[in-house]
Image (cartoon, rainbow, N blue to C red; front, top):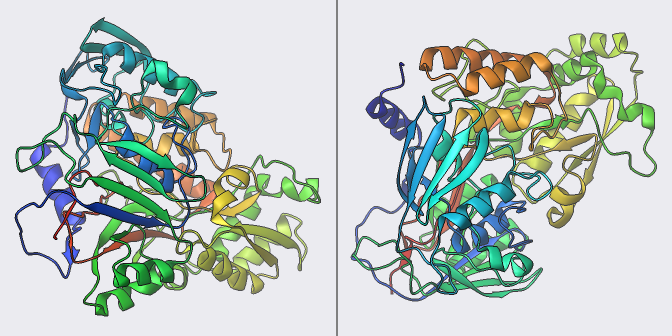
Length: 522
């Protein structure tokens, strides 16, 4: 078996993901206590970690509930509920040993039964429609004893510990299931104090947390964590500058220059594995007033290809996110990724070819297409308007419809025929591709189905030799890029902003935010 040497991979990742605070750097002794206030574009929508949608809600579920592992900034699995693990049978059988000090917020010990109950629930598409395909090829979860869980896989898979540290496989208490969305009981560093739909979510310190901070005392460092919805990005930045908020999770690209000039703001950020696609949905939900024939138009590959050639990618990168990213080639893996297929070149804008393809597909000049977008994620609305202007040259009309972020992901994502979307990166190459392009994958926004692709993804998932695995995932990237079902003009940088009093803020390469190790200077 040949794998990427761990030291080499960690050095590569460290070089790529430099998420230092801009304007910071001093080291201070940790000060405990106080209230940490985080602002986001909308409020927390759900507290059920297995049904969560949107990173506003992640900020709550990540801190109320634990996972077996935590994905580190080097994209490797670190201990969380599981203090150690090992695999046998060629990585088809995994054994996880739980931390015996872990307790739920009601004082009950976390057991292997809780882990099995939680993972079985995530594996049920009805219970976790976004999570079921994101935690590896699990065949069976077995309780060996009170603190030991065995996970049997359908095939060899080396990335299971990383997948188990992702968004959905959070461990819940079985007895809490009925009240999980209003009175959740987790084992995480914070407990719920108050959740108001559309309003502020307040979490308080778990005094009995089992993981230690750098000062040798239990995490978290702060006593209270509040998640405040502030819709406008400029208002969020003003709140940082005034001192009424401590962290702005998502600093929009247009505000980065302004934030850099302020001595009341520090910035954390850099390149990530995130991207923003234009999604051509092959199986949209028919909405009132929409033409059924137009709903099927993206079944024609010439139309999809034409849309790809309409885009001026360099211009789109500048229009949408102020050039703060790298040019994309219609598949999710950027060129700096260890598994990138660097032979796939971004399509150059070719309006005449786009016109020719549209004509061959029977699309008449002046045909209208509705593109749904939102201002709730910096770059999405700008990308939509940019495509609208570029499409005029090809003789088609793009009607941009702005939707409030509070209902965009629930009412339009996966449903509308043509949307602008937003994705953060994922911890493994498999998680970055399979859920999005596998037939009936849990994040398959385009409802794309290709039996050949499914076969390669299945094969790559169980391949342990790095070079062979890379070659297989390279084929996947080429098929996805050629399919033009998700047009990815660019990969985006990510920035957060904070008060200079905030210490320990780090932007994760897959944009996760953990605040248990953040503290504030008095």
